Each structure stands twice: as structure tokens, then as C-alpha cells.
Image (cartoon, rainbow, N blue to C red):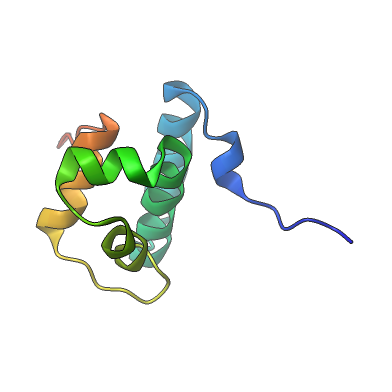
Length: 90
């Protein structure tokens, strides 16, 4: 039996996470971006993210589930917890 690939097992450094997010952002697919943030949160640990953000673990899993439409405020809380800063570049 083969094991399903789980990218969160490989998101173990700030550099890898930054490169992963950069690639996803280049593609411009919002669903893929939300999936990527979910994978990064899983790599850090949903319990820790839950404590940092005040959001329940189950709520976090639902937030980044396929087809979800989370509030921007929720996504920002998770990004802040992950130490990821958004920056506008012109």
C-alpha cells in the first residue's frame, strides 16, 4: 500500500515555505492559495495556530478545506500566526 503525498511534511523551513507560497501566488489561483496556507498551518501544527489565533482547531480545518470561502480576517490571523507578512510591491 502506498502512502498519500502530504506536502505539509516538507514545509519545514521559512525558506521552503516562502518559495512554496511564492509559486502558488504566481499561479493566481485563490483556492490553491487557501490550500497552501492550510498545508503550512498543518505543518506548524493546528493546535498552535488555534492558540495563537483564538480560532478552534475544527474551525481552522474547515477554513482551509477545499471549496471553503473564509473571511479575509481569518486568513490574516492565520498568516500572522505563521509569521507570514503580506507586502504590496508596485
